[in-house]
Image 1: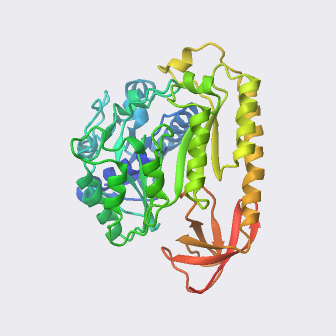
Image 2 (image 1 turned 120 degrees about the vertical axis):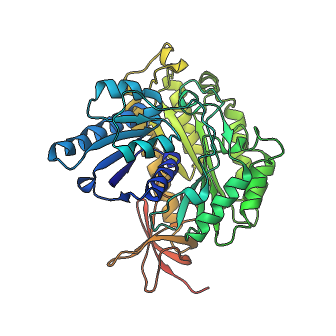
Length: 440
């Protein structure tokens, strides 16, 4: 059967989709890249925030139109939205033939093989992670990087978030399974491993004698073929001196600190359940920069949390202006059904939230452009993600995570995907950098 697998959402969802793809291929099905050629379509959905749910629904309805053309026989949904809202989607969208929660790979394969139509969601609460087993993962892209899931679920209880309700409590993968998958990915040509989870800093806390994140990074460092290791989602309350020391030392782990700060006003952070405050955040940034001026700090912020006053927003704005973080992503607060924050007083109007977001990101754009201009004339190490028939190669510096950070364009001959080069930055055009290779 010809199957089109449509990925939505975060890299953790993408990893799950790779395992679904591998199982379907092993059953003799054919994966197609054009949905118009598919007999079965599986939409791996996301529902973290309202825009993600809206995108998932729009994509499902758009792909469902292919049934009218006669080629598409079955349309299934999987992933977070199916886990959380599967029964509602099945009852409200007759175009959907089945809903499968997280990790339900066997059930998906059975339904596809029998062209079954299901009336209820197939799901397991807080599913174990045994379905994540490297050799059973499909690698279908040519990028030199891969996402490697090290845990799932979350115990933090942030008041704006429903991830624990969707993905369950925090569960670490056994280190042996992660190392096996890392070697598998390296054998498939992946030179950069991006470690993803809901909270990397808690890795191993639930596994007896399994080690912690630093031990995992040390073990991954010996993976042949891997050159860069990039841990994501480092909760600021758990980033300690030992982790900073390891990440800024000479090893394969990049000096890249992905910190979901969410805000800097201590009262709002307490209302969010973030287990940190402004003083500890500023001490953390000082510690990272003292350990290595070359370290890159990426932060995320939420704008318009219930009760956020103009003064509290101004504090966030002033914080960003003072500390000039290297990479910033910001989002307007979205009230999620079932989250404590959705019932809080002081919900802000969308217009005000969007206005504050624009102000914040306009400031960060100026900071980012200034930092890029300062790179002109410097030599940077980059990894090449793609090379087209015409035009420059596209790569990233050590301080840029795939898909979320900026890119760098390298002109020159003989450049191939996966090359790790030293280049001199020749020009900066906003978020884009232009460079030429230099001799070692």
